[in-house]
Image (cartoon, rainbow, N blue to C red; front, side, top):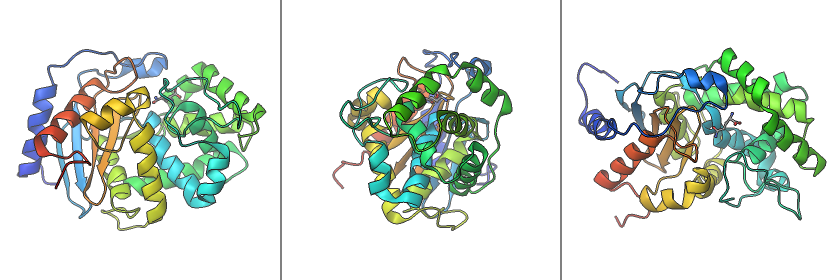
Length: 312
Ligand code: GLN
């Protein structure tokens, strides 16, 4: 994208950013101490079309940790590797209506309710190929980099901070292990998961990652096939039902785009066969979703008729 001659679309993106900018409610995540250092005023957006053009506005190049926005992409890698039947032996597909860090395991099957909450995401990471945490993480890092079309790095300070304060996630891993649904040791699964959450991205990266799902698994910039069309569709379906935690139902009504949020302030959203959008703004609401990210996507969807159930 050439920022010296803004496209009509970049102007539209800049306009929704300015509408959302005055919303300073919410707070940056502090339960992972290193995340508290984020500049709360940052605000950025990017849109990548399945044709391979990228439009950006605001702090679209600012780096932040991907956190839970990694979950659908790691799910896609696990599905690609093991198939739907094997993955769903370990983790369910039902919206939990519960917070992201809920102690959530189905009482009959021992499975976490879905792969978008921490319990399910840790199980998903345990399913990724490799015996050791560094082997699993190498697969995850290469896979997410292929989705983004560039090599992603770990923020080591955030990673250490997650390890130091991650006892609740460890507890979730041990519970899943005792229920027989974790495919590795708890230590291996949480280490891979903490590193995955600590990968740094930009709003532009999230837009391209989401556009890869929108494009049926082929990165629209690099043209690399990252996952199959079935896997892209299954992953998008899980984002639709579970991507915004206990705000997923409300989100589906108001915005109507498959999406995933993270406590680093990022949101990835997409319209199948059309585009991916990435937003970044670090202040979070009570559910852990970016306040201005939600506002921006709500505005965009409303103004431009992007709701997936919109009559066309
Ligand atoms: N690493 C964070 C955690 O496990 C991710 C949570 C999130 O983004 N919602 O708590």
